[in-house]
Image 1: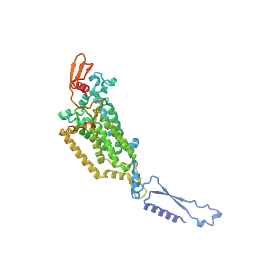
Image 2: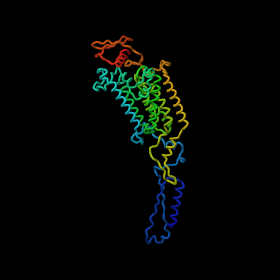
Image 3: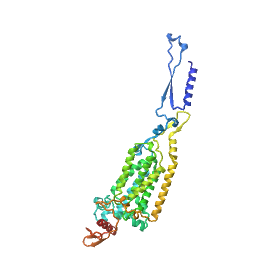
Image 4: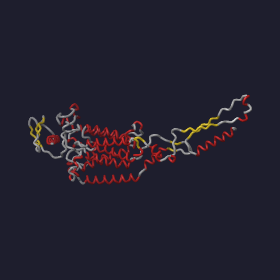
Length: 429
């Protein structure tokens, strides 16, 4: 075989590889011609070049979607559930969740400054070594936090302040407040765990919108069930993120691995938040409103999970980026589902806003609904009854409850009006 024929043979193989659009590589090996010696002089004219073509498959080669079955395509695109992916391997940053955490911490510090247990309660505090930042006794606040009057002053929800005094600004301040140190630690730990994974999966803009709208909706729903005792709504945003996680899991069920473990983790955090909402000062109806908002917005704003690695095909006439195609599909998939969820959310939000503006309180029509917000216990009281006390001012201050006849002698004789009402509620309840 002469060299001209060998060249034609190589060109034919190359053309066939281009036509088939295969991402394969070929190596050509030209065998070494026999050495010139007396034994093979007679066979010199019959010398033949041997070509060995070895097809080597690239391990990271990309097949066209038309060559894959539907199940194979889904399997190739499956990704672990967000809870089970290391944060260090993700693309996006986490600035929006970090900002929310800082705002919550700042609001709690401001609340404790206003509370000033060391001064207002004359040292009758828990963790006295913290002085101004010490907490009210557990008998007064089981979550180790500020007094009821401090929560009222800083912006918590209360029926008389919200409906009678029309202080609607409390709807926007209560989602940033926490009832105590235990509430703060549990809530922020869950926000960091859930929020960081969601933000790195779907981006800060989407998660930021869901967080704010869930917090606002939760506070609005809480206003419809508010009682005449202070309550905070910071858990509504967290439960909104959990609702978003659940809707994302339902929406992308076939694309996730570890989905049952993810569902258990989501429901565990959700149940913890709901149980915490049964303690005084934490509004559980904000959790219900936040969950409804997050669940619907998850169907509106989330998309199919993105693959982590850049995948390209350069094995033929076509050169395309498969990740770009996935992004386009993620942005515009399921428009009917998105539209339906958006319409439902808008109508629900509009209805809740109108009810709040008309001072509707559902507790007047539902005598048992308050048990979803607070369950009475020997460690705390859930009543919102207005108590009255008499004060006898001598060497020591004596407070006597007019409703029950119980009294308490305090080791000081000067007290502010706000603290007087706090102590009266504590003695009478």
